Image (cartoon, rainbow, N blue to C red; front, side):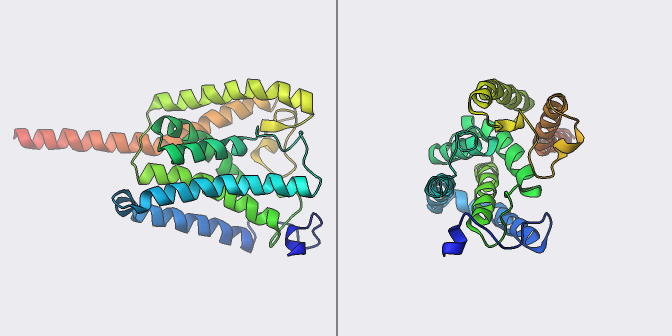
Length: 252
């Protein structure tokens, strides 16, 4: 147990798309599929409130455990541990969304949550830690729960988004970035990667040096939000096509 929570890690460092990485992603995918295939049953049962509260509490507990771990180990800093990382703020809004069953918050949580958690899960930055250290489990549990929270409300409650939601989420993330800039300057932190690129290999490595990569990063974020909206656009198009077809059939 001491090794599990130790600040010192002597095991193999985490490697992208290693066996343990693939297994971790597969577990998250399996949970998503279980939610998808049991959406109707979940919505019509008393399990729904328990499931939402369980996921929300899991999000908060996982984040608080990490803050506590950093504090106990003497590595808590204002440069890293304030709630200005995209995934940290997504953790908070996803938990509130689940507790309150809020569609209004969902419209933001969907884009911010997926926009932060998916790239993080595909290119994890574990600061040199690996399986089976606490940091490894915290990372995959937290980011996995963010995606699961959004997926749950999408499939179980059938929440839908329109094109305005894309631009709304993009506008809000830029407003949030304006708040984060002085925080980075005052603390010397790198929240939202506005001051430098992350240490791990990420798509930002292909966007040029600082500060020029921030402009294409904005375009990447917007494109990513559009990609997340695409399933809704396709479904709306299919529904309109079916509706038009049934209207023609009834008129014949």
